[in-house]
Amino acid sequence: MSNFYSDNPDLAWYVERGVDWAPLVELTEFLHRSPDGFKDARSAVEAYRDVLNLVGELAGDVVAPRAARIDREGVRLVDGEGQVSAPFAEIFEQLGALELHGLALPRELGGQNCPLTVFFLASELMARADLSVMTHFSFHGPMAMAMLAYSWAEGSTTFDPATATITRTRFADAIEEIRRGAAWGAMDITEPDAGSDMAALRTTGTLGEDGQWRLDGQKIFITSGHGKYHFVIARTERAGDPEDPFAGLGGLSMFLARAYEDGEGGRRRFVTIDRLEEKLGHHGSPTASLVFEGTPAELVGQRGEGFKLMLTLMNGARVGVGFEGVGVCEAALRLARAYAAERRSMGKTIDRHEMIADYLDEMETDLLGLRALGVQCAVEVELAQKGGIVLATGLVTDPEEKRRREADVKRHSAHARRLTPLFKYLASEKAVQMARTAIQIHGGVGYTKEYGAEKLLRDALVLPIYEGTSQIQSLMVMKDTLTGIMKEPKRFATRVAQARWHAATARDPLERRVARIQGLARSAEQHLLTRTVADKGRQVVGEPVAEWAKHLKGRWDPKRDFAYAMLHAERLTQLLADEAVAELLLGQARRDPERRVILERYLERAEPRARHLYERITTTGQRLLESLAGDREAERRVG
Ligand SMILES: Cc1cc2nc3c(=O)[nH]c(=O)nc-3n(C[C@H](O)[C@H](O)[C@H](O)COP(=O)(O)OP(=O)(O)OC[C@H]3O[C@@H](n4cnc5c(N)ncnc54)[C@H](O)[C@@H]3O)c2cc1C
Image (cartoon, rainbow, N blue to C red):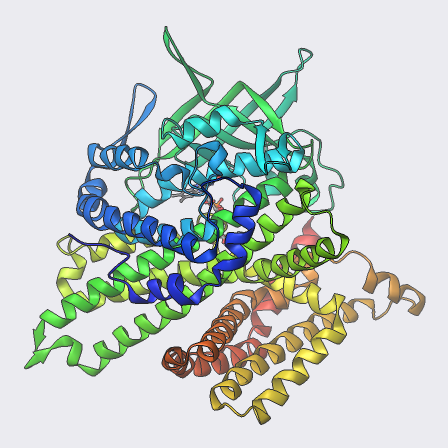
């Protein structure tokens, strides 16, 4: 018997002490009051612990032992339908029977009303057992939650304030089917010529004279795309300004399409599965190429809102992918540690050799930091999302309380926006790095299929690609950082001064060290901003002075004006992720002195990294940028 929850003291620390459950329980229960609801946070946490134990057991006893077979047997396209392997199907039968797809769904919709944070912690457990199982699991409950969230947002969910329950919601039938495990959802964005660049999407949504929307086009790489419910992003309006690379985003709308209908005459398909991808890893998860030809669909939200709605869905999904990464890191560390404790070389087990001991120590330190970032990110996302829904229900009438809640939502939304791309980036990259180190620690057998280390790496490599690549996360971080400073320069100046002051005067030496990382991060940001403004400034030289303000305030061309910042976006993301982890671990150490040792370990690794990143951001890149600018100029002349 193995239980992936009870064998993990760091994860249990969050459940028992690390997470402030009270506001999460308050919001979750506030929205869905019921006689069998929890009266206080303590009784709620007992139930959450039970759920995590159940998932931990399932992951350890049912999923992990089947992982190698799932990897070997993969998926097949049979008579136009996606078919998963027998062990994969068995796992999903059990997940359905245990009603785990309803984990975070409201009680009145048949769910268990757990916070999303509990779902995310459960995700880590499942991903540690098998990434492809976790991925398919995440296209169940979270898709039903997305249906509910969209319905709230467009006003098609009705809520009775007297009983604090949902009385009607637009996608109730689909939600119920998913909750039972009889169906699942998919998120259809990518097309052959449009991946990261969503403005280039070509699939169309057309409104017929009969009032029915129909979809035409091809979507590729659709995870769990052999399923029934598809959120499809399609073009309904023509792109505006041809000079603006983002104009195409405004013409996108969101649809819900049913891929098939099962009736007495059998299955009738509205979406064709062209093929299932043959991939490097992640073999249990079907990745489908889909053809839409006059596929009937329902518009979700308003026309032209597609990009905004898809981002809402993707932001939650990015946190989910982050936890998939944490699970892979945990698996890699355990595999490597167990092997290193057994394998002998030159008179001792290899974990006693300094370099291997250092690898293992770094893996563990990184994992502890990563989990701190993930849990905080999950909590912020949930507080922002549920706080917003509570305000939308009209349940809060007292003006003072309303103001307080609005301020809370604003604060948590800002934190969630800051932490989400950092977490998605760091977790994905660390998963790949740790899986690769696990192979190295295994030596020759790491390169064979015997121990499962190579499977971990093959699986992990998808994490920095789907749900927005690592580069796209970095661009988001960079954009938010620069626009944040430009919008509030005084606040930035205060943060610079605070970091300097704390680095010099804080009584706690660990706090001084965290402040030094903050100082390096602010200096790097300052450098990037100064360079960006200076580059833009150079363009106005030669223009009449009266035109300068127009150029500086006018539209910025992302291809040209942010070149230096974009070049260093990933390095800044790494630095800001280390800063965020250090801050969170400092907060933990203040509340619980036992956590000080984790902060010390993390700082020992993060401080030299931060200095190195700062150095690279401020001293490299000029040669490459000049060469790119030269190419652009040549292209312009030819064009
Ligand atoms: C297993 C798997 C499952 C997937 N599941 C889904 C799914 O369920 N739904 C769905 O819609 N899609 C899915 N995808 C698609 C995935 O989201 C895309 O592959 C991803 O967004 C990258 O798009 P692309 O492949 O077109 O690469 P491109 O966008 O062509 O990018 C290629 C490379 O260029 C980089 N790049 C692109 N633009 C920039 C830029 N401006 N600056 C710097 N670097 C840049 C990228 O980071 C990447 O390294 C899945 C992919 C895989 C492999």
